[in-house]
Image (cartoon, rainbow, N blue to C red; front, side, top):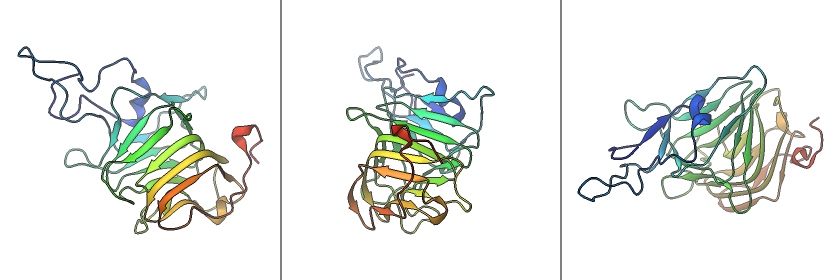
Length: 239
C-alpha cells in the first residue's frame, strides 16, 4: 500500500474491525526503483464518515486496533462527503490501547441509543482523538445520543465548539428520555475546547460518571451536570 497520492487505504466504519496491525498502510520505508520514497501522500488510513450498522447476532463486539499510521476522519471534498462517524443501535465497539484518530474540522462521533463504545486506553498507550487543525474547538467532539461510553485513559484535543448545533463540549451526553446504557469515564484528558469539557444533560444525570479528569485550555466548565453515575468500570452494576 505504497506510492499513492492520497491514502493507502480508505475504510468504512463497518470494516474497521478487519484491519490488521501488521500491514504497512503508510508505505513507510518503501522505495521506488530509483531509491526515492514511495510513502503515501497522506500518512493516514482514511476513516470514511459512515455508520457502523453491522450488528453480530451473537452479541460479539468489533475491535478497532492501532495501525502504523493514525486514522483520519474528514469530510474532505467530493467524493469524500459527510462529517460524522456514527455507531448505530446494537453495535458494540472496543478501541484498543494506542489507537489514534486525527479529526478534521467540523467532524464528530455519534454514539446512538442502544450502542456501546469502549475506549480501552492505558497510561502508556491512551486512545487519542486529536485535532488535525491547530487551535481549540476545531472539531465537534462526541455526541452521546443515548449510547454508552466506557473509557479509560482517553485524550481529546481541540474538540468542543460552542457554536455547534449539537455538541456543547468535547463529550456531550444529550438525548431526551436518557440513555440505553450507563457511562463511566476514567483518566480523561481534554485540552483545547471552545465550549465545556463534558456536558451531562438532565436526562442523563445519575447515569454518567467521570473520575480523574484533567481539563486544559477549556473555555467553559470542566464538567456540566450531575456526575453521579455508578462506577461501572470498577464493577458496580449499571442502574
